[in-house]
Length: 449
Ligand SMILES: Cc1ncc(COP(=O)(O)O)c(C=O)c1O
Image (tube, rainbow, N blue to C red; front, side, top):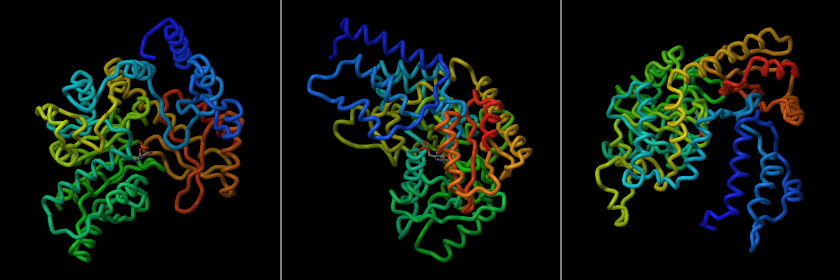
């Protein structure tokens, strides 16, 4: 099993060939199969003697892969798609082949050095000081949780007598904030957004003060702003909220899992004024920064706060305690894949200007899509896109109509667009993060509405 013999050599050629064909060709859209359909085609694969690499690869190629939607398809516009560059995907093969350990400097210095340069680029774009730093974690959910755990750890040391802790965020914050609050057993203070669905600094200041007045034994330990909401792509009043948090000595976390990627373009960077006030922020390269799953960049203004909250201690870990940068110390994890390396490789290969161009391209398509929707007789645009999410409704349709349309779109292998809801009403949204998504792709989908 651990020898690179002739059989493995032949299998390697087949696996590499499959991977290259997948990269070179336009991806198929594909879609889910039922359990029974899969079982009929695949049967039992785990046996005492093994089915052999060739058979396993064939099953993957001809059945299992076809039962997975290609998230990089240009007409995959549901949720938040992914659009890794060719070089990022290729380097993922290198990472997979190299048994790199990304938890400590001792074991992974070279890889950690490169990951940290990619993190530095993001941190500089956000305007955090040179002393900032962080780590790539699995996804935005873990990134948000790790930042909030660090925030509470910091607050506990300053306010030891607090009875109950709370996080303040907008009622349009991502579901992972609520999930973090559940895991941490803390309250959520949900604050209303303004009529444009933006959380405002003045409202936050008022609500936070009111909460503390009404609950003198409780304390809000973190204020979370969203830089690009998942549903509509809206950027909160980052500067006003940051000031409200800073003035009150409360940790300021910016969830930019999707949106903060647009810091990469000089055109959209000004939209994020105020992010430089953050104590921590996240952005997912696997969303709109053209990296493969799964990578979330988590950055702390003062990494020491993250380290104090997250470092694990044990006799067997003492050799790592050399004062060097150990990525494990900055989030909820110990063993880690160097998941930031494909992103680093692509950034280093293409340079940051190409990132800005690709970003602009997706936002141009989003604006053009919004225009086409406004001109469409059956559709109503919810609002002009601030980033690259375009939300709209189909006149006269019920929830069931939306779902039927979405199912048919996928069944016909035209595209993947799932219904969402806004203010209790069903909506459709295009999340455009793929530079391969052209206005023609949008027209093809709009023609079915
Ligand atoms: C704003 C925001 N925050 C957090 C997340 C969670 O990220 P992940 O799915 O990588 O855990 C998402 C995912 O779409 C998001 O849009």
